[in-house]
Amino acid sequence: MAVGGDSAGGTLSIVSALQARDAGLPLRLQMLFYPGCAAHQDTPSHRTFAHGFVLEEPSITWFFSQYLNSQAERDDWRFSPLNAPELEGVAPAWIGLAECDPLVDEGVMFADRLRMAGVPVDIEIYRGVTHEFIKMGRAIPEALRAHQDAARALRQAFEGAQ
Image 1 (cartoon, one colour):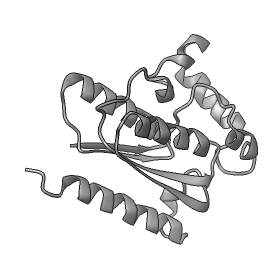
Image 2 (image 1 turned 120 degrees about the horizontal axis):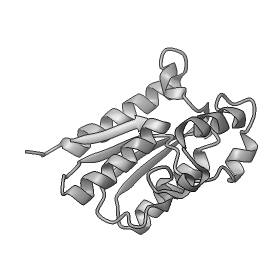
Image 3 (image 1 turned 90 degrees about the vertical axis):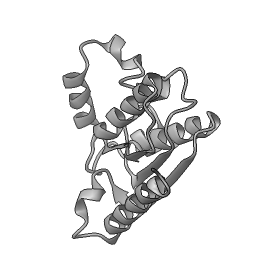
Image 4 (image 1 turned 90 degrees about the horizontal axis):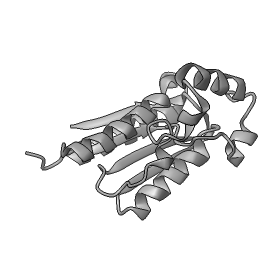
């Protein structure tokens, strides 16, 4: 079994992978497209890409206001996987990030945390594209390449699996 998703779906996939690890349910892969990973939107990419790049700061603020019951929940690792106390033993990850996305820095930070925990990580940053680019497969070659890369990672995760 593998988990995967994009944006908030990527966040939910990370949380599911951590819960699967804790329940003793082995996963072959986390397939994550530009997941939200941080409690606060204060990275350089959040400042650089706050306006004019599909996922804008006012939208992020609105999404969070719909998701969270209180500001205290921002620091819960299930909202902010970067706050997870322990990442050791979680499934390997394939992470596809968009270069022109407010979430790119937190995606890189999450990949770094996974690596520091000994988790195998394959990360791709697709140049010149924005959040949601994987849904543009009929329009931009980077989306097609990302689809191919993700499919290859999924296939490799299950090669030799019984």
